[in-house]
Image (cartoon, rainbow, N blue to C red; front, side):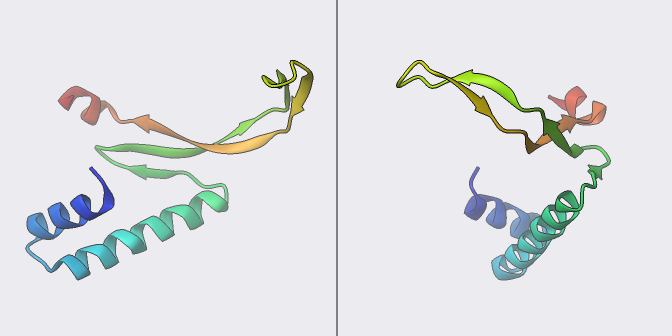
Length: 89
């Protein structure tokens, strides 16, 4: 499902216009990103949790040259499925 399909499905389910559904989806994504940037978690009961994970710096290999390189530390987002959603799948 891409964004356009999501917007259409939400608009149909909520019995609203596609433009209103898209505004709500866009606003939700902006709020989630802002909270994750601050280091917070986003928990949606019955769906799951988005959490910021920290990766340590590590050694890797450049596949083109075979030389060892240092991969810098970084942050990434992880998703943890709720028990309720897992049970439905």
